[in-house]
Length: 304
Image (cartoon, rainbow, N blue to C red; front, side, top):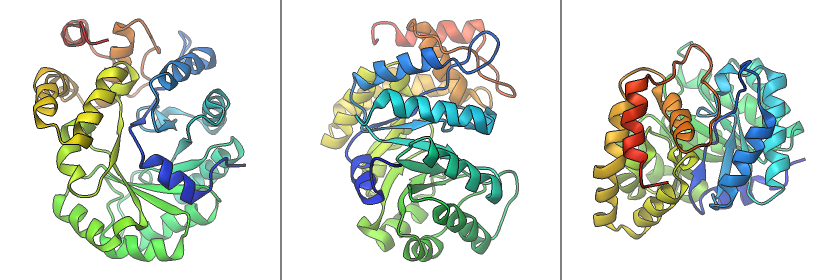
């Protein structure tokens, strides 16, 4: 059973910085639960407002359903009610429904609904997909607006009217006009989460559009920096924000942008550099090469 009802979850998610833990794998490429639990405990010392278990940075796309349940259950048990745990969910409708049910069984507080697998679809089809997931669970659901799952304000309003447990909208698409139309239409009916990589780059302008929080992958290996940057955003401290962008976030993003999939790979690389290794990324992703590791290490030096 969920520890928080959807309304409580919405309030908690919007209250502070969110973290996307990576999923730890051992040398045999299997889930390393002990290391994963240790990492979550370390993250909790830095007081995130919530954790997304087995999300995009957690390589949801590479997990079978039994592995997924183990990851979510481990996160739930390790947090022990200290912060809400939201689980990734995706693929085609039938599979997404099964993952949502598995997340609820594992004790998650909410669902982050990732794009459906492969296909493009009309707004009515995307709405039906999201509604099926919402109605399959009592958990609060956040829609992740990105890739082939981009919905407009009409679709979102209709969904929210039919699905009381639809509590949030995470934007990874980056259409400023669409985001403005959605917030103007929906207001405080939803909690809004920034989801563009790297989230810190867009945090200040998105704050002006009602997006009070974002999920920080950088939190995995530089939680103090991530928290300080978030605090500066909430205070609209432009000097601190642009210093952080100039000295770390934008150079970090240049490395991340060199290859597809590096948005995940660079996070595990950062963890290895600070002495908290999480194993390699799973195929089809690729790890950073030695030169890129050196570049990232130089950026991280003195910040951990």
